[in-house]
Each structure stands twice: as C-alpha cells, then as structure tokens.
Length: 80
Image 1 (cartoon, helix red, strand yellow):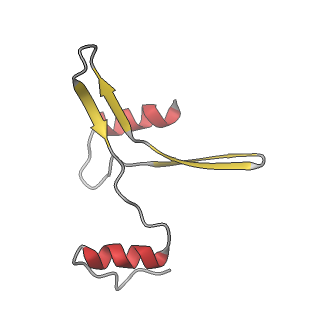
Image 2 (cartoon, rainbow, N blue to C red):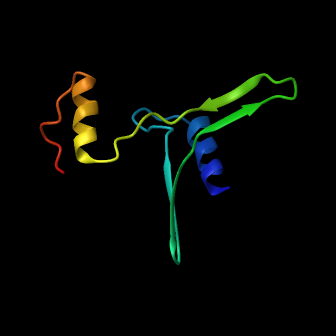
C-alpha cells in the first residue's frame, strides 16, 4: 500500500529530474523482498487510465556499463 501511495504521489506531482520509477525493499526477519512500482489501472469500461512500466535496471556493475554504452553514453565517473 505504501508503494502504491508513493507512486501515485510522485506521478501526480512530477518534478524535473525525479523519476516516477521506484524500487521498494521490504526487510523482515528471514526475508528480503525487492519490488518495483509498476502499475496499470483501468476504468470500468476497460479503458487504461494509468500505466507505469519499470524500465530495465542493471543488476550489477558490468550490466550497468553495458547499458550506458548501448545508450551511447560514457560512465567515466561511475564507481563500482
């Protein structure tokens, strides 16, 4: 519920430079869960009213460098 509330707040009040894509980590005794804030809502007639799909995120430094290079950018200042 908290993830959905934050997602809606960020998407309803956009700020330049702040991404609407969020990761949420829940830590409990014996369990760690990582979730995104992907959401899709529809009206009663089936019309999609809101959609937020999480972009691909690098899971390690090598994957990060590959994604940066594939986008035609440089990661010169990035530290592993």
